[in-house]
Image (cartoon, rainbow, N blue to C red; front, side, top):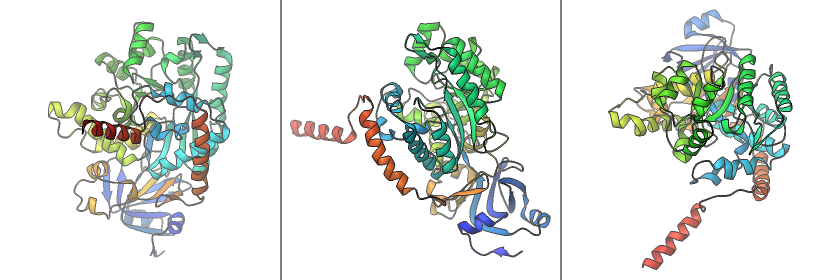
Length: 472
């Protein structure tokens, strides 16, 4: 068949052989290659003429000046916190106690749907085709989150929080375990939803519950999520309670292993790195969270050198995959590389791979997404390289990490279906959602017992002006 003359959304949806200028494969970027999309998967990949020869009857679509690359994977998100956003800017650590717990406790099913769909839309706009949600503290069920992410068209690893400790009291274990088992079964065969079990932080559950929820996750072939070693106060509380640091304690009680995905792990000792490697646990490196509210930066390069599996997450801070990778490399350079003269600091490709293949692997989706590979789900981006910032191009992986931008993403495709075109959904209007978010968020924030320690930036500016006036 003849080559399609125009590159438009409708032609992308109809095309079966895609011929980009650049294709990002597991071994790196290549030129002169083509892919075949069939039944939502990559059915064939190879040199363009070979692929065309194997599929003479399929329509072809040339994508001049574009890169076809795997969609990014956000390995640590909080979908139902999207109402809060800038409320936590400039706040010290453990904002979950003062902002997120109070906010999420006010959310009903409609709030869950609207806030999750907003977060999913932001993630798609930022180049993420998969998000791993760590679980909501809302007492509502998770059906609304499933509906929201499915309607938006994003792949979601959906965590169910299974905490059994409330202050000094312990909740009855049986209902929690029953709900966990139901969650694992309910979404077992969903196209876009993958179930996961979570404990928000180790101290929020008894040792018995931590052990059992980890075991249930491992037995089901799903991931167990928890935040560990993120803040100094949490490390000290664990030492006071158990005589062990959080990661040490998880290992001691049998809740650390191949099924575990630890968020942050910023405050880690050499011994804890050894534990993570020996027990094959995975970590979500969240560089923007470290910069905005953390006590430290996870030693991601040291973890990789130890053989620890790593993905990369936003922690719900900002759903922009390119800026996330930029922060990932910069944080390692500032925290570790500069002081030892490491001018490469991951060589660009490290962070690109961690944000795609690595993220899918630690989320338990390595066989499905994160790579352009025959048999994998067709979750991919088309990125326009014809921009001044990437001209001339000498090292595409480095350029994607340091200078590529979200506005270069022309198309976001999940499971072979076009979801966003030039930043906007192709099959639904986002404006009514944004209008509803503005209205609902005002009510939710007003009802929540949120306690901020720092004033808004405008008030800070006014105070500074007052001080300057006094000094004058």
